[in-house]
Length: 142
Image (tube, rainbow, N blue to C red; front, side, top):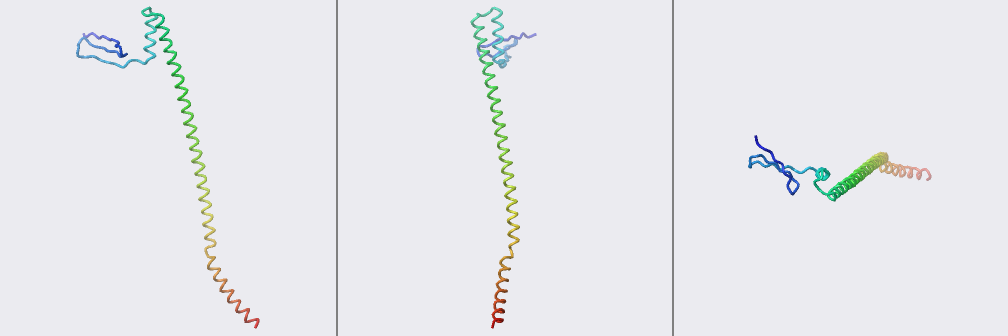
């Protein structure tokens, strides 16, 4: 049966190898906090110094505060994006209402124009009638 060996390299990756030298498996390191917690646990068991424990706990605190800061920044960006989306929707609705109002006004003006479309014809007929009545009135007065 092959023997499996795990070894943590200096770059933070784990290497495992079987008793056969041809097969070596590299895996990605666990998240930073998990590595730090594992190191703290090994220190607490007495393998490292107290200063190292405090340093690692400080790193964890820094990472947690950065995580909280980034989470707040993300929430702020989400709310800003939501506000921008609502503003754009409101402006689009207002523009749509304005276009509908202008279309109604245009239709009203078209109807009014159709109503007065025979103006020139009526004016010509009145001119003819005026000339006709003018000569008739002239002939009555003589």
